[in-house]
Length: 57
Image 1 (cartoon, one colour):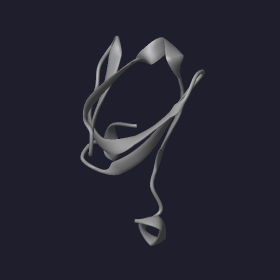
Image 2 (cartoon, rainbow, N blue to C red):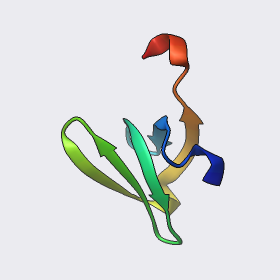
Image 3 (cartoon, helix red, strand yellow):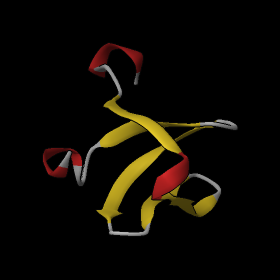
Image 4 (cartoon, helix red, strand yellow):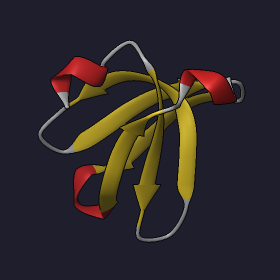
């Protein structure tokens, strides 16, 4: 997943889905920056991270 840093991604969690640019994947948190600001998601809640298809941008 390190190869996704700096790319626009969808982060799916047990509760919701977030979209933004992946900034960091740490031991405890995943950090995104989106149109509304910074999003910090606990790693234990993340179920999937995938790059946004360039056709959907």
